Every structure is written in C-alpha cells, then in structure tokens.
Length: 207
Figure 1: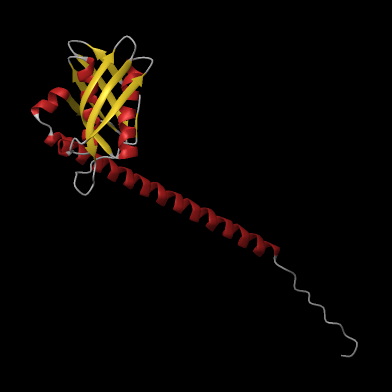
Figure 2 (figure 1 turned 180 degrees about the vertical axis):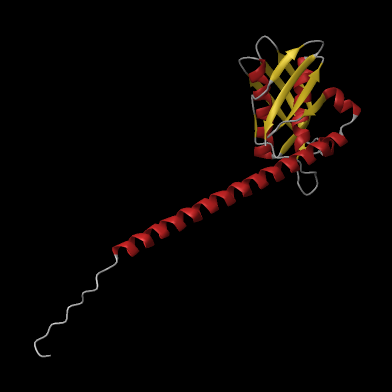
C-alpha cells in the first residue's frame, strides 16, 4: 500500500539477556573453581611425592651409616624438612659432626676426594647462632664452589662464640658422586645446642 510505513514492533528480550549474562558468569566461576581444585590436588600430590623422595633418601642414608657415624650423629624425622642430632665430647667434635651430618644428606662424604682446603672464621652471639652460621658458611661453600668438606681442624671458643680453622674437602661431581637431598638453608626450627654427659645439637634443614 502506497504511503505505508512498516514498523518493527519486536523488542529485545531483556529477561533473556540477563539470563545469558548470569549463565556466562556462572560458568566462568565454575571453571575457576575447578581449576583451583585441580591445582590444589596437584600440589598435594607433588608434596607427597617430594616427602616420599626425602623419606627414601633418609632411609638410604640410614642404611649407609656405620657404627662410627651413629656415635657422631643420627637423622631425625620432620614433617616437611630434614634434621639431625649431632654429638661430641668437645665443642670441636660437635661442630665437626654437625657438618658431616649436613653433608651426608647431600652425598656420600666418604667418596669425596680431599683436594681443596679453605680457611674458615665464624663469629656469633651465642652457641645457637654459632651453629647456624657455621653450617650456613659450609653450605655457602657448596652452593658457590660445589665443595663438600670432610676433614676439619678447628678451634671453638665457647666464651667468645667463635670458630677458627681450616676445612679440607673436594668438589662434588654429580656424574661421579651420589646426589642426595638438596639443602636450601639452615634453620633455627627446633634447634638445640646443650651439654649433659656430652655435647648435643639438634638442627633442622630446609629442603
């Protein structure tokens, strides 16, 4: 019909548009929730696997321990890290045995060739921090030069909380030496340094 104007009376369905937006946001949130759950389960499985590996390494180390080692130190259990107790009739013996205990987590110390010597000086505020700084210094030698020390000629001053002396050891080569647990840091967690019938120390190491 001439002169007629067609008008589209169809209006957008506001309700449908709102439902579509709601469904979109719902599925986005659901997807995020499923991803979070998946990552949580994955992290849990990785943590259990890591603890299992650490446990097997400790068990392997325990099997390698000689009667002489058992009089020097022993490994202790920890829910997330590793630890040891060291013993000595003197402070020098105590600190040497603590060093050997830490290195024994990392490799077979007896297999390391003693070809490198380093002078060591440590000064601290008390016996706890002296033990921490001593092990931290030896860990630094491993991280910076791949050195594992196995023989020690040190003097510990109990009143001044200091250590002076030399350490003899060699370079760790993963192609020739057993690779154990990677020690990230020394900690103060559960640390003890005390004397009863003999000197005794307990140290936890972050892995």
